[in-house]
Length: 146
Image 1 (cartoon, rainbow, N blue to C red):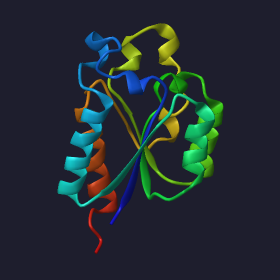
Image 2: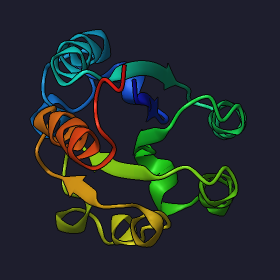
Image 3: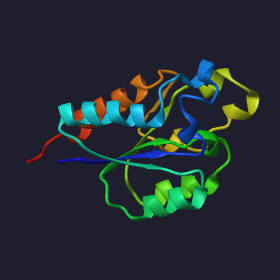
């Protein structure tokens, strides 16, 4: 079974209450429940990790106990060379997901340290973006291999 790590960056723990006009009203737990259900349908094994600390995200990647990742780095997308280096260093493919479309927001959000090394970027589709990422993973890497 393909093992998928869903890595959630800073402030995503505030989903549902943080700027709902941008990020929606769904909580992180609700988002993860939907991802779990879709992953099960696709025959994927999914694990979640969220942190507001860059080093914790990097340490989680270093475990290398996954086949492919879905990464929403939040604000670290625009600032973290260290996270980029970790994603390259662990040699695991990943899909970048953002609930909103950073390219339509403030100019500082137009900088993206991850897009050019990701398999693809799925932006501005809310929770559906994670489902699309799972569908791409199932198509490219297979679901249940057992």
